[in-house]
Structure formats: C-alpha cells, structure tokens
Image 1 (tube, one colour):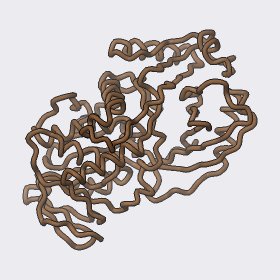
Image 2 (spheres, helix red, strand yellow):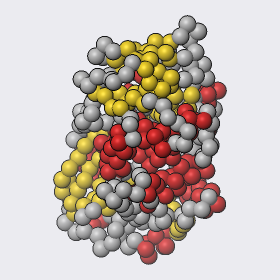
Image 3 (cartoon, helix red, strand yellow):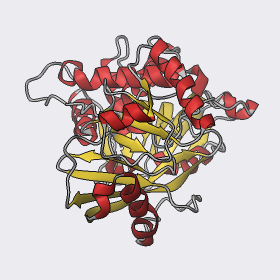
Image 4 (cartoon, one colour):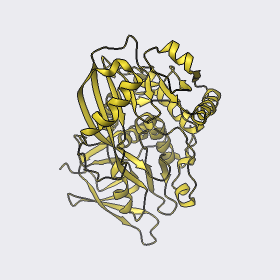
Length: 400
C-alpha cells in the first residue's frame, strides 16, 4: 500500500471514485482554499465501484427544481468540459448524446403526473415536451403504444455521455493540482472528547492521520464509513442490472432512453442498445455481492422490450453486468453536507442512481461548503442530513 506523505491533512476524503475525485478536483479550483487534501481509496482499480458500472446518463426530467438545476449544470459541465478543466489541449471534449428520456404513461394518473412534472421542468428552462400517444407514434413509429396514454420527452441536454472519461480527468487533474491519492482503507475514526469532531482516521496500513474535515464519499459502503463516526445512515447497496444487446433489425433512428411503465429502460448505445432494471426482489445486499441472476434478461427484460419495440423480437446480448446503487432507503435522494453534531463529518452519499449526472454540481457545492462554510452557486441544503433526523422526505416524484 502507498503511504501518506504527511500525518495531517485539512481534508481526508474516504473513497476516490466519482464523488471523491470530483470533490478533490473542485477543492483545488476553489478560490481561497489552499488546504492539503488526501484521498483514501481501498481499490484503485475501481473494478467494483458504482462509477465503473454506470450507464452515464443525464436528465432534466425531475419533479424538484433543485434536481433539475443540478442536472442543468451537469449538462453545461459536459459541454464545456475542456474549459472547466483549464483549457489544456490534451483534455478531451465530451459529447452529450441528446436522444433524451422518453417516459411512457399507461394510466391517467401517471399521465397527469408527467404533465405536472413537465410544467415544472419548462419553468426551470428545460425543453421537455408532454406528448400524446399519437405524437409519440408519429415521432417514433417503432413503439407499440396500445396501452400508452401519453409521454414526456426532452432532446435538449438530456441523454448520455462518456462518464468514464469525466471521472478519469477529475482524478488526473486533482493529482496534477496537488491532491494526494493513496491505496489504503479507513478502518476507524477517532472523535474528540465531546464527540463533536473527527480528529483522526486510522488506516488499514496502521497509519493514523489527523484531519480537519473528513468526507464520506464511499458509495455503497457509506454506512460502514459513517458508523466509524457513530452515525447511522440509511444508504445500502442495491443491485441494478445492465444488458447491452445487438438487434437483428436495427431501428432506423436513435432510440431515446425509454422508461417503460414496468420500470425497465432501454436506449441506443452506439451501434448497439442498452437495457436495464432492478430485480423484482429489490433488497439490500452486501457491498461485495455481485452475483448475477441470469433469468432476469429472459424472464423480465426481453419480454418487455420486445413487446414495446417489436423490432427487438430477435436480439443477442453481447455484454451484461450488475452494479450497485448507493440506495438511500429513506427517500432515494442524495445526502449532502455536514452532520449536525459531528460537525467536520461531511456526507456525499445516497445518490440512488443519480450520482454520475449530479457529480459536477455536488462536487462544486461541497467544495464551497468546505472552503467557505456555505453553498454559493446552488443551495444544496435540501439534501442535508438533518432532514433524515426530522423525517422530512426530499420530495422527488421522478425516481427510476
């Protein structure tokens, strides 16, 4: 294991995947912050990280203004990636494939909810359209829509992008700007006598590191990290399945990321197609449980997509994997910010599948919180840990 170069850091980040690296990089770009930053990552291959299993999608089709604004900044960040990264010519340009999300509603209540959400999105500047069944059929004649009443669709700044490249450059530029990454694991935290601050983190290697702030960016392992500080957090690993397939009859146009009323989603993925879903028995699992239920494709996913898109009657799966959502069992939205008692313990947890698209805005926001003691560009206080203590859910109706 690599050793830390110092015994004390202003910020220790537990976890170096998309959130740990986003925050690390943003801290180095935040005016007035000149602290020493350590990122502790237990698996620098990131083989089992949620970041490595992401579908790299981004949408503005949320029902809560804050979530919409977070993804709008995410789209701005993708479009201007090289400029955000300092303009160096070796930084690649990222492309946002704006095929959009297509939500399909099969009941009047669902259709009305989509219409309500569309009004909120339009007021926030999103270009979401609420479409009748006939309008959907005219634009995308490959759908079978006998059971569909209406849908929502947005082809502006909504679709998918290369999240792996974004993550790679967060990490590269954080290191270039002086952030230290080590291959080690935080195994314990030492609090002060009053229990109001984490004073030290103990590493698996035996090193004891003093810290000014400790950040929980440990994905599906978030609760294990928070418990080291005596904090219970309702974030658990939940399995999510992804299948990449080839079609004997490719569609004549790009397939939007289509959310079927069953919850199964499918979209264009280059020359292939990508589908995904949760298991029917959506339970908490161990962070290292990646066992694969091969019946899910044949019994759950393929029958739905072949019914919705008859051209997919003949397809061949060419890749498949199972990853983990860092699933907030309380309200399926992020937990961001400081703990109310252990004041230097900062959460970046519980993204429940929204994490990649939200990482630019939330990395920026937490960097502001650490550097200035407040959010300056976008108010993230609705995501605070205190809402869990008050049992006040973050109201977001558009959860996949």
